[in-house]
Amino acid sequence: MQVSFDISLYPLAEAQYKDEIWAFIERLNQIDGLKVITNGMSSQVFGEYEHTSKHVMAEIQRVHEQLGSAVFILKIIASDRSHIINHQGN
Image 1 (tube, one colour):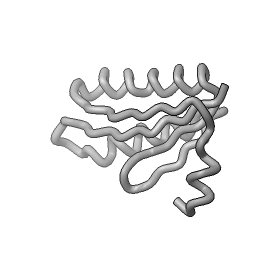
Image 2 (image 1 turned 30 degrees about the vertical axis):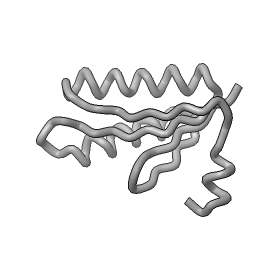
Image 3 (image 1 turned 180 degrees about the horizontal axis):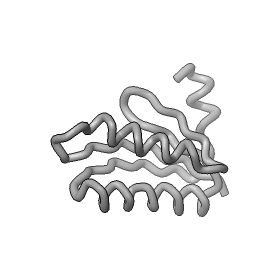
Image 4 (image 1 turned 90 degrees about the vertical axis):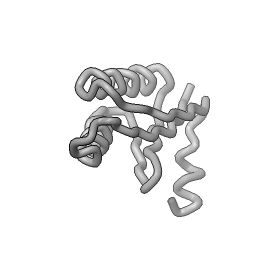
C-alpha cells in the first residue's frame, strides 16, 4: 500500500530554525524509496506505507532528540497523491 505524508515542521528553538527545517528535508531526500516534494508551506513525502512511515517517524524522533522542542503537523493519506500535486503544477 502507498502512503502520502504532508509534513510541516516548526522548531521552537530560537537559533537557525530554517537550517533545522532544511536539514530535516535533506535527510528525507537521502532515503531510497521516498519521493519528497517541498513547497513554501510544507513537504510531501510519498512511498510504500511501512517504509515511508518508519523513516519519517525516525527523522521526527531525530529532530526531537536534537532540538528538544519542535512541533510537527502531519496529514497522512493512504494512497500516493503525488500525481495530483504534479498535475496541479505545485
